[in-house]
Image (cartoon, rainbow, N blue to C red; front, top):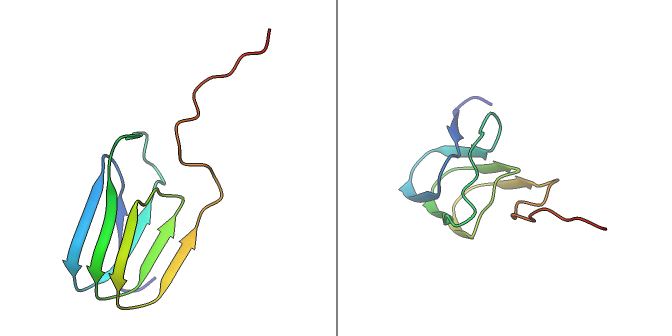
Length: 81
């Protein structure tokens, strides 16, 4: 999308007071930070989130589009015996 800059989500995310459109995605990311905090506050622009964890979204001054088709928690390994 014009005006959007992809941000690679690696280890935690804390965005505040940004005047731009923001795209947050796990695409091409091999890292998982299950203890990280993922926050977006005071965004003056549109927010697009694609399968990325978010703990907080606050005061977004624009359109918000969130697509989540997977569980983003660490579910561990299960075994039946």
